[in-house]
Image (tube, rainbow, N blue to C red; front, side, top):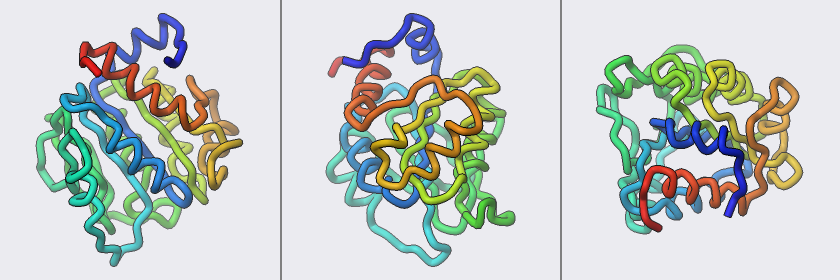
Length: 205
């Protein structure tokens, strides 16, 4: 099991939402992480992957069949609920509203991306403050680095996949170059982090 300091464990215990961002090279890993989540997972999860504007996929339905948690595309004005994984849809940014609801936004792309990881990470941090865990995985541009560091600046827990093991290291390396993430984890440790979140929120594995 992942060996964490008491300070990090307290921040995990205080967390109210989990964010995951990825691009090229990270899709298979994030799918495995979603299907690994135990039933009753104590936090809502928002996943932002770079998708083309006309991208259509049944991946959410396929993941739902294999998962113990609810998996779906994020919808506008939808309440954010625990034990649910929300995937950002193609051609929309996903935002959090003060009432702990999702909203979809069609404003300009950031880093040539819509959905943008930065946009979601910053929006959620503005609503949830320090009660955020954000994980940045493999990707081919710097989207997500600014958002992760923004979350770190609000005392949320910032986590990156070790660039040395990322299929495409640019995204996690950009975050590492920009700030000092709380955790730099190899792939196996990312799954152990999910276990730790569940255990510290009293979910039996």
